Length: 266
Image 1: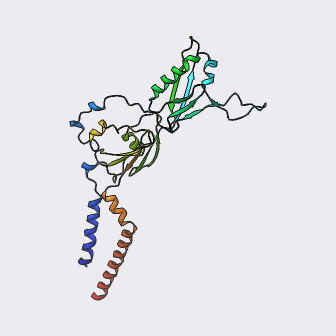
Image 2: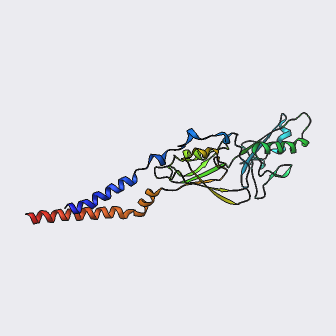
Image 3: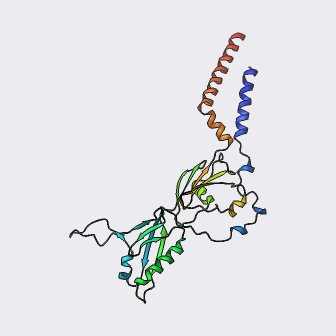
């Protein structure tokens, strides 16, 4: 009987030890006390990319002066068959592959590579000739389609909307419920599409505080973050349902062996 139980006990010990994650591999920013964060100084400004959806509003003291520059989409027709005067929504502007938007009155305006503030200044400069000297238009630009995707060993994988137009890789992971115990914290994959369509990949080590100084610390629009499973999760996945079947088979054989031993003894 000892020969039957010893392999089972040994296997259980191996499984339990393998499933215990080392604290050294789990903790973030392990060297934060000895790392200089001077390189991270500066505020992040996202840049406009192709396929971004922009919401642009122009405001003036005289509403009629800015009316031609604010495209409004109406949802219904009034009794006369014309577009209704209420319930309208501002038209969004999709940046094409060449980096242009089609703006009212102005026509094609190249905005790719600009920050939000730079885009606002550019549009204001182009609008000013159409305004009276007493007007000082206020142009507001918002990135309406800013989002990132987090996949892999996180609690809630999926698409994360970014309403503030600024999100770090750690904020994205936190929004996805943080890494599971099986996630590889020292080898997080970031896939990014540049303005020219080129895809690039970069590996991030969340255990190292220098990630805060990394140019990849803040995520761009449509970035994809993938957390790989560690060795323990990979082994468990490889074993799969066969492990349960194997343990069931061993349990049955053990019961049969015990029954046979009892019969022989009697």
